[in-house]
Length: 395
Image (spheres, rainbow, N blue to C red):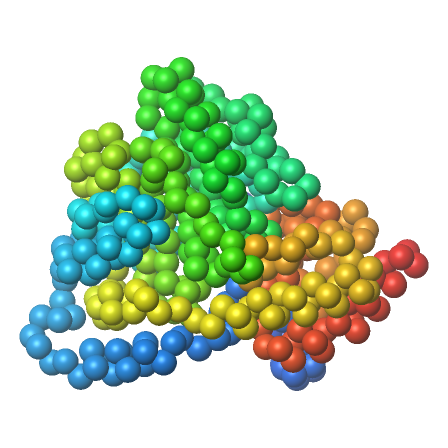
């Protein structure tokens, strides 16, 4: 075989998000971009804050020798210290720069952490639905994802998570605010999860980590807050990025924050720094590191996403769809009006609406809408949603 069998299999199961994104490109070329309503991919449509452009211009003009060369694999120390101050506030915990490793986005962060803690055959428990790339990230390091069912409103169910534990469990991975549901897990839910992980760590005689994937942490609505996990659980690691909060997805800049109370902090951070290097990332982009260090108090106009959410929710409800109101991120996860969510997304495609089947997120019977789109996309799509639902009811 020309390519690795595992990659060949992965290509067959490739992300529905990318499939719909590619389908959308063809549709736009045929029918005109203004006539296609693209909710397929979570690519922020808002521009970065104006301060980003000023900062970038200033940094680009700095000709100090060595600014664009290698730095320590963990990132510039002053950048790590700046990020640590921000994380200290968010986590209500004093965090120092040596707990921070700058990363190539949240995806790079997760891979670096997995490589540092995973032995072949280890298992990672994830509440579903979840971002499908987790499956591939785990496979990169010969780990297995164990899926735990959630409630109809997407709260974690501690009993279903506990049922997935085994002596091979190495981590529980959570994503809050969640992609694809927009769910923000409550402190009560997280506290119960922390107690469970502590119990299972003692039972199996091994460290089990709580890993939080938090790129949407600042994209929250209606006064909701994302609870801190460092005070709840000592062996906790946060993987995050500036892709959504600053609309810098293409710059691939993020960070890993390790709870300073973790068992043997220098050993764990040292392992992650090494995996950052040997996975080929080497270090996070130098220019992007310097930029975000100056922009930690900035974020995009989140109210625009909230307004999109409310308009889309109201329109879908008026047409007869059932959808839970998300607390954060920029996704809706409505119920499909027919059991086959893939078939229903094809009905939407007939209306020039690009949506992703919930099956692609281990959440069959739903479909995902990324409303980080133009206002015209939201309002212009509503008649098509109504027509697609009517067709589905007709059979």
